[in-house]
Amino acid sequence: MSTVYNFGPGPAVMPKEVLETAQHELLDWKGTGISVMEASHRSKEFMAMAEESETDLREILGIPDNYKVLFLQGGATTQFAMVPMNLLKAGKVADYILTGGWSVKASKEAMRLGDVNIAATSEEQNFMTIPDRNSWQLSDDAAYVYYCSNETIGGVEFQSTIDVDDIPVVCDMTSHALSRPMNVSKYGILIAGSQKNIGPAGMTIVIIRDDLMGEESKELPTLMDYAHMTATQSMSNTPSTFSWYMAGLIFKWIKKQGGLEAMEQNAITRSGKLYQAIDASDFYTNLIDVRYRSRMNVTFTLTDTSLESEFLKGSEDAGLAALKGHRSVGGMRASIYNAMPLAGVDALIEFAQDFEKQNG
Ligand code: PMP
Image (cartoon, rainbow, N blue to C red):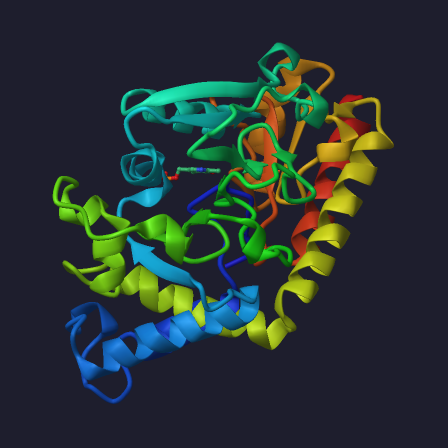
């Protein structure tokens, strides 16, 4: 079979080595004679794996001791509700910074549950930039300020932590988690759906500062209560065992590659090459404010939009999969997560340049 590079935004490319390890262990996991998918989450092997995966993640991200790490079900979207359910008490307001489809979706979910202040939005700029910090209208006593640090659809990435004094910062880092070092202590809650840099879909990692969790609630549904999920080590019910196991393998892979510094260097190289090729051509365009171009999701359009379907068909035939942009914005999007080899980006550039020669 010829090589296929998967540029899908998620579920997304995974490291080949990790897939091979999973394949090798599939029928007999840790000498148990059964697959990890068949193992009880309360078995000693699974509990040991779960503990080790948390230790590895803590090491990779440098998570301080006063933060808990949860491995939850329900996707990142469930967190759009869990955050306000747990943090947005009556009489309080939550500030949202809107920079694209995912932060908008999170704000709409929060509006169903409490008072939301849209402190800043780049909607008028079609979400192609991040509103200047001095234009943000933050509330005096917000329960938290929420943002999405990498907007997967548009390809807009915050290049540093937001600066908001003492308000707890809630950040959806789903689509660039583990692609760069982060100072966890600057955040109240970090959310990362698994299906990009972490593993298969079906799990969401939540990193939460102790003081934001409070006591176990008498009102919240148990599975929606951070304090309860912490007390039960994310195993109040059956967790997403296979996704958790795969995440554990990926954490080990990241450590072996040299940790987040290495992931960041690779991301800079990959995205730099791709943006350079786009910028060098009049045939392709990236419309995102250059200061906030995403290293993970590189969006581009063809000047002659009538050629888009031909581009997509040709790229698919050339083994460059899933380059179609999100249905809400159109165009093309190359998602180049941690596991994308540089050769994949080179192959895309070569294809795009040939396509331009033939059609430009
Ligand atoms: N946030 C971001 C930044 C995303 O990219 C996505 C999914 N692409 C989500 C949230 C939602 O994740 P899920 O589908 O797992 O709920």
